[in-house]
Image (cartoon, rainbow, N blue to C red; front, side, top):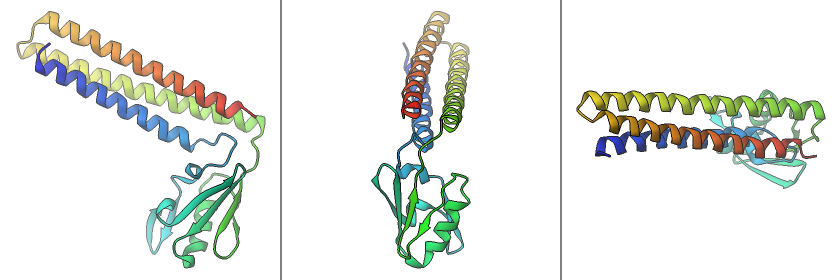
Length: 187
């Protein structure tokens, strides 16, 4: 393989790896029964007029499997943090104790678990679409290499390698989904 072919394959692998990393982050946001600080990632707090991720405004801990404790760095912002959590759509109702917020994480109902599995499935499918888009881009690059003088056989070989890469990353997505589904459905 030429250097250009190897570069094209490396770029495809990097793009697919980024898709998997994004999948992992999205899966962390999907609640699986027990309290986890990452459940609050994505919550934006109006911090002195600036929309700021909650992780930058407070310490977030889980003392046990059913409780999240949010302790603001600046105690005067506790009401803004409380409001942001309540308006986040996560279904949490924090208890304000003056210096910190306690969030009881209720056990999931069977219906809610099935909704979360659907949500995880959607994220997995979106990730597969992303991987296929990377494959399409890499195949286009491979075809351009042929125009630049790389042999037809080498381009065919490169496209086969890109497809193998795509298949392996799609299989990883399925494996991560299966793990997440089991995690969600385990009571």
